[in-house]
Amino acid sequence: MQQHSNEINLEQRGAITLFNIRGDLTSFSEPSLSEAYQSANEQGAAKILLKIDKKAYINSGGIAALIQILALSKRNNQNIGITGVSDHFKKIFSMVGITRFADIHESVENALEVMS
Amino acid sequence: MSARTIEVRLANKLGYERVAMACSASFAQMMGLPPERIEDLKTMVSEAAINAMQHGNKGRSDARVTVSMNCQNNILNVSVMDEGDGIKEFPPKPDIEKIIEDLESPVGFGLFLINQLADQVEFNEVTDGGHVVKMAIKMNS
Image (cartoon, rainbow over all chains, first blue to last red):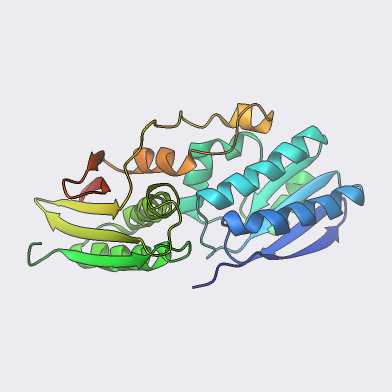
């Protein structure tokens, strides 16, 4: 059973850089998330939206990888949001404190409206 | 092992925790656990199995993780056993503020989530060797 890094496509939607994150979020996600973040940061991203697959499996390794992105975005004064999260992982993100550093949005459209 | 106990032996390789998640979810559904608690159970089982693979069995490919579950007296019990020595020192609750400020490493989320989601958790040594995490969910919680 293989675990893979993620395919992440960056898309500019107005002032917001959208990270389309395909696949599960585990400890194997860290390199691809870091690489995508570095690329967005170099292009001057000021607002970042992380779009996760609604059916993605997310474990503590993936949570740690996400938090590292939140830390980098805070250091670089970037506004960051998350969308595509199931109700269960909204609860988990609240428990671990992710929601103190990133707003969870119901949809990409809702996020674009709120973050713009 | 009682007639109504399910047992799964996992390869000690990250990713195989998903087999235990799927089995526990099917079993819990059969027993009538509400869907939102099944999601909690899947996270508990996943995190306990990952800890067993990484910290208990220390990544040894010849080691196994045994996950067993049963439902008695309206409580769903899940045990995750590894071949290690147990947890010598429990990590502190992860402090996201400190992690974000790079004052703390982003570790300890697995145990934190297990403790948050389970109605009861025990960490015990096994007489014949190994370590077991016993987690319980009340069927009507």
